[in-house]
Length: 113
Image 1: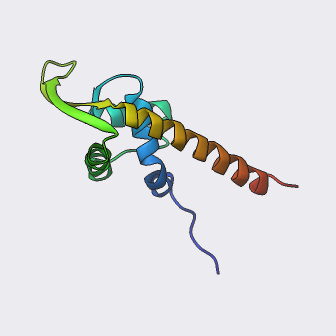
Image 2 (image 1 turned 60 degrees about the vertical axis):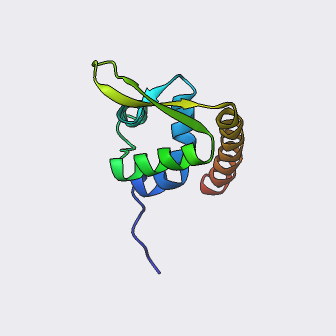
C-alpha cells in the first residue's frame, strides 16, 4: 500500500509545542514572532500557520507552561506576549530529551545499511 509522503507541515504538528517552548526560552515573544522565528530558523522548511500556532499557545498556557500578558511589540503595536514559566522550562527539557531519543532511533532505522 503506497502512500503519499507527508509534508513537513504535517510532521510539524507533533513537534509544535516543543518548538514554541524552545523559542520562548529565548525570551518573551508575541505569536507572530514565534512563528517567524521557526520559519526563519528552518529556512522556511516549516511554516507555522495561525490555525495551528494560537491553539498551541492557548494549550501551553492552560497547562501552565507559558504565561501571557498584553504588551507592546517591537513595532510599537499592542500584542499578547508569551513567556516561558518554570514548569515550561522543565517541560522543554523533557521534550528535548524525548525528541533526541526519537530522532536517534528513527535515524538508526532510516540510515541503516
